[in-house]
Image (tube, rainbow, N blue to C red; front, top):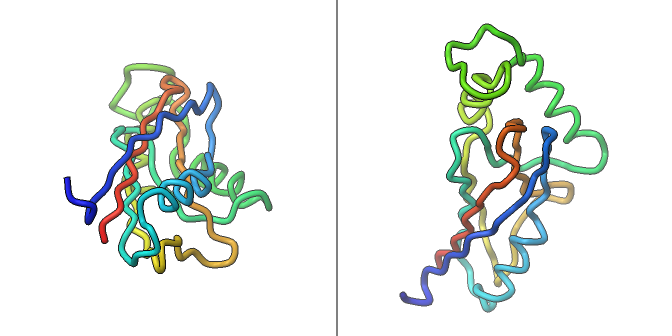
Length: 140
């Protein structure tokens, strides 16, 4: 594989509760090893039907606000036709339509170009699956 494209899979344990899991440090560590001062794009992808990637402020309540907003938009009740798993699990399968399973971000000089308060986060509302994979890919 050319050094113009490098990829790595992260194995993340999200636990048994809904979560917004900050991946920013993992992304930065990956770029330190692979980008070597180059410009390019970082693609972050979660290959799961019930999780997404969000660029959001964390630690000041926005992560909890996102989960609360998702509860309002996608209630965990019996309205969903998709019914396997925990009650209300069908909403988890609708989540990626609102929080997509990918994000592509600019990399300049080997560094992730995020705004001051932005973080790269895995959004996981599916308590039935506490283990997730996240693929990081750098394209120069």
